[in-house]
Image 1 (cartoon, rainbow, N blue to C red):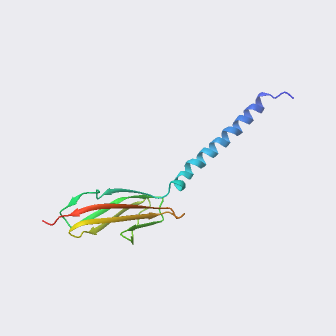
Image 2: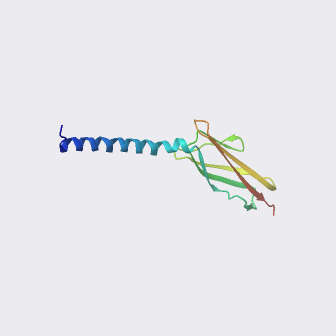
Image 3: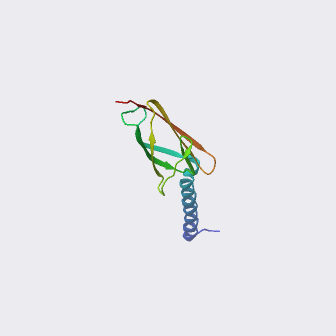
Length: 117
């Protein structure tokens, strides 16, 4: 049986459709596979502050639970978070923890110094 041009067009169209669906599924699945991500914009790790009240700001992606020093921290629809924290004199460690709905978790520790004037 001889195959005509429409057979090849249908065959390659089907192959292209399958490749597009598989590629798109892989692209969307990367969020699940990567797990939670915390991008902190403030404060900087290792920084020294002269005021006791600082602002913690950043973006958390792919998270269902976010904690700042073991207390809940809430995000907006885009994943932005902001909270204030009162520092103790001297060396301080700030701990941010994020967990996604599949149980994957990530932790960031920021070490800062508060010097009283």
